[in-house]
Image (cartoon, rainbow, N blue to C red; front, side):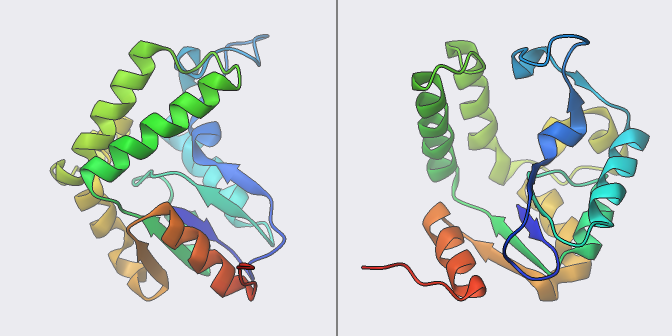
Length: 177
């Protein structure tokens, strides 16, 4: 999901993982799996602080603590691919980052991410308590319910290509052919 505020460009992009987790003290370059999940209250405060800025773009798929971003966004692009497409996309992303030297993507991380991508469309709707306890409770059904109060600003995309094309269309840019 990509939520954007007040116009489209230029914006500073914020990865919601960076709001939801913190690296170990004095280890800013630690692998992401070593990061610590911050409290629900801290997440809400960070999301509210980001939403109060004039221009921002937030990317991630967190329901349960991102209401401030959802409500403040001018447009929300929801990347909601099929399970096979999501799995292939996650593996491609992992391979590219691993090739670039990232230590975050070892075989165990790739398998875990692929399993998560495969199950995302079919996960049951999560309760607020389940979302507070574990991020893996997020799924397509949960996100659909979470976004329903602002459905007028949600654009559901089935592929990354569709997201890129939508951003280009919304920003008034077109891709040179």
